[in-house]
Every structure is written in C-alpha cells, then in structure tokens.
View 1 (cartoon, one colour):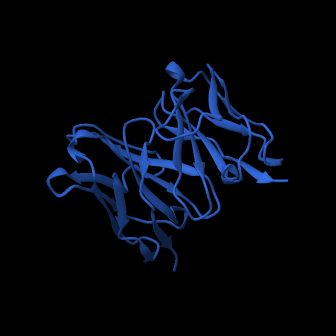
View 2 (view 1 turned 30 degrees about the vertical axis):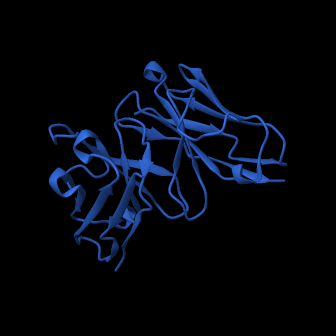
Length: 108
Length: 116
C-alpha cells in the first residue's frame, strides 16, 4: 500500500502568516489523485482539496494544493483564526486508499 | 443539504458484534459510492470499506476483511456496516462518507468501543 508521510507534525504560526504543509508518498500517486482534509476537535473531517489542486465547494482561495508524483503541498497563504486545525492528505489512486498521519497547525 | 447520520455505536466485548447504520438525506443515495472511514481515539484516519452505487463492487481494508460486511439499501437511503469478531484495535469513531476515491461529505461519526 502507498504510505503517506506528512511534515511537519506540528506547525506553529501566527494569524496572517503563510503555512506550507507537505505530503510525501512512498510511490507515485496515480493521476494526482490526492486529497486534503481539515479536521477540528470533535468534528468530522472536511474535504478541502481533491485532484491535488482543485478546491472543494466553499473552500476559500487562500487554500491551494500543488504537486504530482510523490510530493504534494497544501499552502495556506494567510492564516485566519479558523484555519488552525489538523490537516490530512489522502491518496485515492491505488487501493487501499490511505491517509497521512496529519499535520497540526497551531497558534504560535 | 447533504446529511449523513451514523448510529449503532456503543460498548461491546472483544469477539462481539455490532451493526452500524448511516442515514442519508439531501441527495440520491443510489447514485453514489459510499464508504466507512474510522479514527481511533487521538489517532489518524483509516479507510475501512467502500460499496459502489449498485453494490456490485465492494472493497475492504485488510485489517477488517473477513470480519466486517458493508451493505446498503438504496430504497431506505441507508448504508450499513456489520462488524463481527470485534477486537480492541477496532475501537474508533466510525464515519460514513460519500463518493468514490475522495470523500466529499462525512457524517459526524459513531463511537465504537471494544473492551471487556
């Protein structure tokens, strides 16, 4: 199965700063079938990005996804207070679908 | 508005069984692949199982294969997960989620605790 490794484990930033989250796959992800989810405490995950770079409905344009092959990035251009949460990447190019272990974006 | 509401979780002893349900509304269930994804307390996400719109294609994670059975009743707008031979490591919040591949909509989850 494809193992996804997210880095860093925790990102400590201030509102207004730029956040760069990395997701590295153990083998190439087919057709850039890579998604990103946000999860806040006590809530279900929410889809933010699919197809490596397409924003889901209602997701603000300060969120952007990029990458291909084995290296993918989620960028938040200017952090808003509501963006502090855990972010997971997920590949759906090769069964079984797998998730990264998550990156926590916390307030510095 | 798309809504997914899970139910059926609870405390069960190792080796026991439990059946989870997911009630769907706000969309036509019969048009979509549906999934179960779980999250152990304080841990990350793990895909568990998927079922195609007509139930013709079913997939399981290796960790649950042979013990869990996914099914659906499109007429009742419902998705199910029959869990047998439960183990402590199955303790998790179980979410139903819509769509094939990436998961566009999620329920709020139902907690399954396997403990003696």
